[in-house]
Amino acid sequence: MSRGRHHGGDRSGNRFGDRGGDTPRTGGPGERSVYGVGPVREVIARRPESVKVLWVDPQRAGKTAGDPVAQIVQAARAAGIRVEDRDRQTLDGAAGEGGRHQGIIAWLGAFGYADVDDLVAGAGDEPALIVALDGVEDPRNLGAILRSAYLLGAHGVIIPEHRAAQVTAVVAKASAGASELVPIAQVGNLVRALDQLRELGLWRVAVHAEMDAKPISEIDGTLPLVLVLGAEGTGVRPLVAKNCDFHALIPMQRSAVGSFNVSVAAALALYEMRRQRTTRS
Image (tube, rainbow, N blue to C red; front, side, top):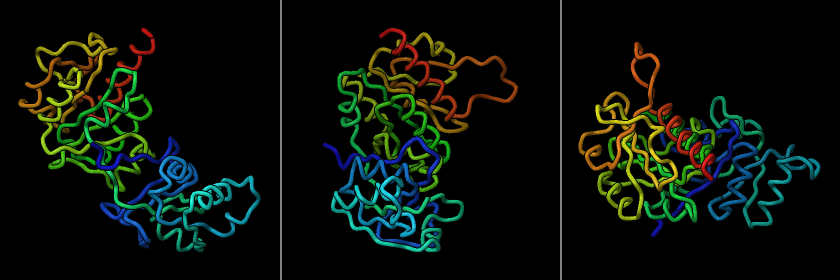
């Protein structure tokens, strides 16, 4: 059962924020904020019930019906969302330094994580493709992985509850809004979560450069899969790797500067799985 699947944002470079990790200079009537035309439009279209109040620049909201902010205000009012005028200084403060709010900010409730089985169910008739992260602590890496997961059609991302980055404003910014679009499950025990996925029919693939690992291109990407990637520096823990069905590596032409960053490795692995699914369909 889901504890509240979340969505939101879009593929644009607009910014998201919340009260944790990257606090805006000015607070508002919600646990976190979504700002910018694209992300706000998306969250109102997908989950209007999550929006507590919409702050808008009256100079934008009062323009012609063709103005995107005016269109969003109209959609918000149709959905029963309260709309409040705020001056540019207040909006700038709520978005924080460098935040491109474009005259519109939506205040939302607390972030809602999905359950593991919801991620699989969300795949529908397609073989599930999920990313599981083993202790990725850098929030920018997590954000980049979420962005790749969304763009390359993954059905969800799993993160540990402890000793790992959680969804904060830094993560949301790095994801360019994807943190509000791709379902994210938070688990207390990653090994148990992987066992649960195996029971649901997914094959577990540890993506790391171990001796018995095969090139990622030799993994059958058309199968229901969960790609397991490890923390920066340490990689996939032995106990987690032991519970995986396959081990895959991403071949490199040069190794003088070490291995791929985890977010790059995730993007490359997801691309290969998506490439196989596209060419074999």
